[in-house]
Image (tube, rainbow, N blue to C red):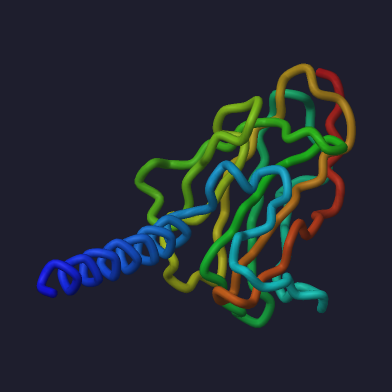
Length: 171
């Protein structure tokens, strides 16, 4: 009888620990496993209404190898908890992000076939704006679009919102 009670308590503690682990994992950033779909594993559908967040580019045209600043900003100071940001040429994730390791809000992650090629949140605190530096590959030519998934609350998020195109030319 005692061993059955201990067994049930042990199962409950394992279950509770797994919930805490999953919650903690997402509060410190998106996993690389969602890089392709850009969809959080929140067990609800994304919003279909227009996103209240803007993707602002410091320039609309650069040379290959040049950096730009990309800012994610909530309209009317709309806050968000999490992001996943990538630059894409077609379906290919391109370029690298240069994020200060001391930044308290964002960090880079390595999506497949790249290093530091995406940015995600470091915590689930509310933010109304974040800015990051993105560097185009030196040999890249074409129109790059930044893709953003933004999480306002666990059940309220927008997936793969597109920026205006960034035109990249030869040096």
